[in-house]
Image (cartoon, rainbow, N blue to C red; front, side, top):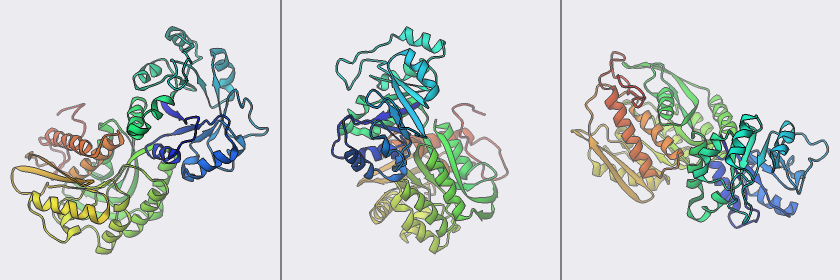
Length: 460
């Protein structure tokens, strides 16, 4: 079930920024409704919204702006009941009776039916339908996936809207009522009720399935997200080690990323192997053009054994181009030592490194302590001036292949669900620990075996 948002009827300070933030958080379609507006006022708002997001906007007014601004389409209503002569493109419309729905569905991509519940934004605009009437309309085929519910919809009513057979829900008063208290987090809570969060994994392929893009997809799926992917390299590897790496042409990496971002409402991006500076530039260019609020980068610079996997020039390019675009970077101890130029062996040194790197690159750092000696594990997060330690007992397992990929993908998925950074990391670490526990007695391969990502469904 899709989730759509209608703008407030008035213009307000920061509106373009709020709309942009919603698009960055994965909003698929925005309906621009400004009764009585002038074309110049509407242009002023559209000009402040990045061009890449305008193709997700449907306008209720000034239909002549749809083509020059590259908008998704137009919406017909009482003020503007007919499309312009010769208009080609997406058309939706407002309906207030089931008879209207039956007559207009054939000519529209979808129709709004309202008011389903008492309106939040319009005082005295009461529900026009009983639940039983709507159920009968579904059974009769009137309500289907091209009918979108509007009016009085909030988080508690989304389940019933889905059960009634609507193809989507429109929110207005409920979402804009959270403008001061957390617009994007509230939107993400609503979105989780309608569709899984989309997470784009950009990483190398592991044919043995334990790490890389395969581990990312398993993790995202196990945590209830929808996994999209862009492959940066084909590797020849198994549980015994890496025998070869064949980078994807940088242009092709960028085309993959762009194809996903152009189509899917991506809520988070996880970046893994970036084999060279040209690939870093290609990925960075896509993310600059289509910013995402949740970018997690697991910098695959040094192998578990301490072997360098990136040249100094390529590493510097990734730091310069990608780190500033990230929400959090998740290096292991070897990678952190290479970034800081100093070896680390204690949680205190990890804290100092996390703070130093965060201040240098302007993003959060999660320094992973899996290579610390002893029975206690400790990861350190430095996020917006706050240090947090995540300590736990080490799980004795011979199967740890893909642990870093799994953790970073889990963090990205939890962030995509709207959780704050500390909570997202905490839940991601709990997931990884359980995946290690579930896989420690498996014998898949002759070397460092994989975690068991789907322990919630099956235990072997």
